[in-house]
Length: 137
Image (cartoon, rainbow, N blue to C red; front, top):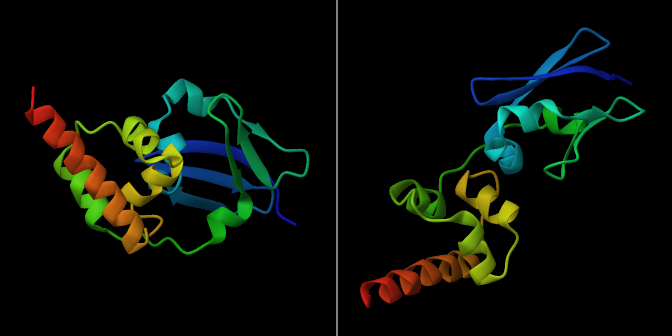
């Protein structure tokens, strides 16, 4: 089994090298907590005793070596397009308002997870409601 020996970040990607001489990378879009973390937070990680996973305690993120071997497929969707169009939307607050985890909403936004139509409707209805409430001010 390969073991992770080094972790680094460049060009919105996370890289690992292994004791077998292999280098793997993934887009940070696949890991929203890491994408939003500061450079200092990204540098504070531990490789587990088996060498097959990385842990960022401060931001509560874990990545297994298998994640680097998976196919990278980022699919744009209406949620990602909405948040791109309105970058002032607060992901944490929208997620809290609709009762889902911020990381899950971030995965919808970054296109690494596809929301159901019901979830799309809920997210968009929530954003529209917030907009209507703001228009009343």
